[in-house]
Length: 259
Length: 345
Image (cartoon, rainbow over all chains, first blue to last red; front, side):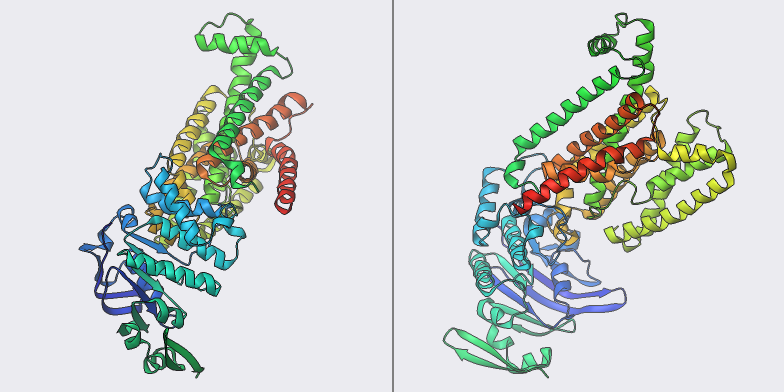
């Protein structure tokens, strides 16, 4: 499998006149889980949209390996980079298995039936997200966390060098949230580039190799967990008091006071 | 709700084949039924001979009834039913809204406005097809207005399309009311046209509606899988490689134009485009590659059934739109309550 490196050069984005992201210079390297953290409205989802080529930068560029993602046709990009977004429409009764199979869309020619290896990917993704028992249920009838597991499974089935996820675990119970993060870590071990927007700082601390801390559209801190998740940074960005406790399992963040 | 197991490709293929066979049988029965009934065997022989170009097995009167009156009407009716129901399925998928139908974006109001104008002013500058041409032009202009209004966000998002459609429809409805007000004694002609009818349709009408329906079907089926994926939402669909803006525009124009042709040929026949896709979704599931053919065939069956009932079985012709709702409504209620029961059991 190809590897995928995202390079952001002087990247800026504005919705109409309002600047959302300003002058980002970052690199997302393969074989790592990158966490993007920051308060509401700090530009996390916009950043993912720019990486996925869904939004056009107002300044600067996003490069995937050597190619500018804005110039890359959607069908080609879909073979390189999967996005698990927070979209939740699904008015129609597609089942879990059918939805996960949609992840194979970029790999199946227009008038072909899914090949055995497509179905095998789907099965593996269903198993990884603990969805075997739910495979024939309509996604619209599932709980929020189960829908998120379906969306992540779809992203896994797409089987691309890069996987982008927008708050993939926000509605999951802790067991499934951890299983999801462990699956992402396994993907990173196989050389894939994983970029996840995360709300839960402890999940981020536990599973991310690298963190980007965004604040008001700019990078406040960037690097490994111990460098980014400090009480000072947390206070400056989220406006809360927290203590970072060193445990034998890694750092744990205890939140002390809201304001 | 059907389970995934009950909608395997094999089963769905059988369902579509069964629908096609039902449509063929119904068309044959419709040829036989009427004020003067023709034995089905004779109908079949006449049709086969007609296909071979040797039309001497029927007497002149029977042949006249079959080929000049019934067949054009039946073919037009089936084509319009197919086009409307298939377009309805496309609109529901495109607008991510199960309440959408071919007329949600104002196509029918535009066509009705054009036709009402032609009827009011007694326009006939193009000969008999004047009404048809004006109805189609009204629909096409409405579509252009809706797309240019909704396209301001650069995405043709379902929400802006529906809003633009509602606004344009409202303006046109007011225009139609005004035309009716001006029409005085001719108002009944306009009202009757608006209710829809297949009386006196010619082979030209059938050819027009049939080719429009088939061409639109081919285009929509080509994008069937993309339409499935667009139900995940715009961001997800685009990240799966679907060029959502382009696909949405192509399907929108295709489904609207076939609806416009249907309205121009037959008047405004509601209900088929709304209910048939729902019904078929319960039977073959939401996959558009099965839903589109099943809906088209289901729409043709429903409309032909209604038209045959009003033409051959009732003492007086009842407007077809009224009858489709009277026949289709209870069927839908039955299937709906059955599927709810199954879902709970």
